[in-house]
Image 1 (cartoon, rainbow, N blue to C red):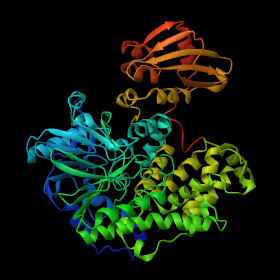
Image 2 (cartoon, helix red, strand yellow):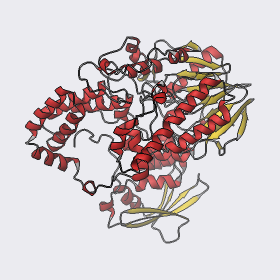
Image 3 (cartoon, rainbow, N blue to C red):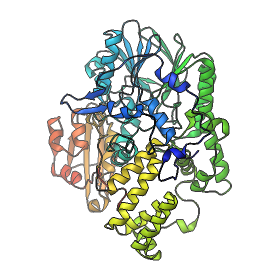
Image 4 (cartoon, rainbow, N blue to C red):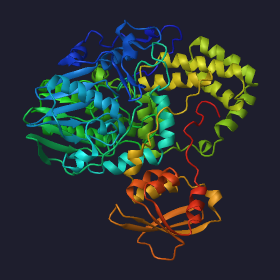
Amino acid sequence: MSNTTENDHDQQDGADPAFPYADRRDFEDARRGFIATIEPAVIRGADGSVVYDIDSFRFLDGEGSPAVHPSLWRQSQLVQQHGLFEVVEGIYQVRNFDLSNITFVEGDTGVIVIDPLISTETAAAALALYREHRGEKPVVAVIYTHSHIDHFGGVKGVVSQAEVDAGVPVIAPAGFLEHAISENVYAGTAMGRRAAYMYGAALPRGERGSVGAGLGQSTSNGTVTLIAPTVYVTRTGEEHTIDGVRIVFQMAPGTEAPSEMHFFFPDRKALCMAENATHTLHNLLTLRGAVVRDPHAWAGYLTEAIETFAGEAEVAFASHHWPTWGTEHIAEFLSTQRDLYAYLHDQTLRLLNQGYTGTEIAELIELPPAIEAAWNTHGYYGSVSHNVKAIYQRYMGWYDGNPSHLWQHTPVEAGTRYVEFMGGADAVVEKARGSLESGDLRWAAQVLDHVVFAQPDHEGAKALLSEVLEQLGFGSENGTWRAAYLSGSMELRGAAFGTPTNPAAADLLAQLTPELFFDAIAVQVDGPRAWDLDLATRWTFPDHDGETYRVTLRNGVLTAARDGKGEVSLTVTVPKSALGGLATGDVQAAMAGGLLLDGDASVLQSVLGVLDPGDPNFNIVTP
């Protein structure tokens, strides 16, 4: 399955005639059950700023563009459908009010909310639309299907902490809180910067800019919140009845998220597949960065769902895209999705055991015709190319076994040497221009990248690389590849945009466990600056059952030992309300939140003084 065409004039020429464009069932399903939407289709914050602009994608109503792969245009048209939809009687979804879907399940007295989007503003707008057409039903429960931010960040737009404290349950799979927080704390800065490329956050909407991310149109940029779960699902087959609604759960850890679950509503014959069966090939290693996902486990849990629920289900819906109706269609859809991940896993293992490297396997693998012919297997969000490399990485790591690759130069040092070998920057740029004109965009990008890293002030190299990346973007069937290429092109032209969104929201930081808090501090310690420090402190967390830790900073390493013995020069008492401020190094905010210091307060300043927070604006396409 091709991810890009290499025609640099008309990307419509890249359409594969074998693609089943005459099959319109997806369009029928994407519109099925439509009730209403909002006009204008723009969601704003309390200050009037735009949080999510659905109308900005109205250009997709047209017939396509030479600057967009026709298959991606089709997918974006489908995902652009927005508003309130009936899935079955008693189950409703609001789609395209954010990257993900929010689902409302009606009970005896109120409504259960599934996956309340990224931002409180978008979640509140979705709930308001639902209530406008289904009545003022109170929220009686919230379910998080998994631990990614687009499935919990808007929770305080549908329910308050006070309501949860008063008894409204928040249900999540085991391990949810740890994974939801750690992903945004450990490598959150780097992930956020790279996500800006992946989702095209700063790209203009239009045929030469953002057309959607394949999984959803874009991410909202409102207020991110988190309410900790009050009920954890721990085993497959576990059943809960909420407001008269029976739900049977299936655990699916280590799939699209490290903490994830599916569930079935037996009285409504409805199956929720979370994010493990959508109308695209998903990511095994997302371009923003993450721990590599397990396609073998993913396929296994899909098999279990098929065997357990598919024969009874009459509709299957997910946290993205549109539902699938009909028992036979559900079985076909889930089986095709299962076969897709299993095939990529098994064939990558077969070829790596024959000595092929990840980049080689990515060029060798072809999907079986029956899988290739299904629209839901196309790489709009994940891709065969980068998923195969992820599988290789999962099993073999970064090293491909060739000792020539064991100790290579950095991009700047390698670029300098390549350019010198190839006759100098001007000569390389001219040769790359020839590659562009001949349609070899991949090679043009590769050699121009060396020039830019060797001589970042070479305007001709940056301009030509920007053009090459733009053409690669125009030819990509994958929404995230397109966004990455066009974002790189934008920044090469001087429009640096940094990280438009901050994943480390106050509500997430406030939910840090003591262990995660210390981990978050430890990964910021500037080792060389801390080499000569030998400090010992004691930390008490009254809102975490009074847990205490002896924390040392020695040899540039911060170590926390629960109930650790030994003398200390400072005792720090950290209530939950002070965690967020302290995690960001804002001592004044932490003190306002109740932080107490007993002993030599300068010790805390010494620890905070050697922290080196991440840079949300680090360079990507330039050194």
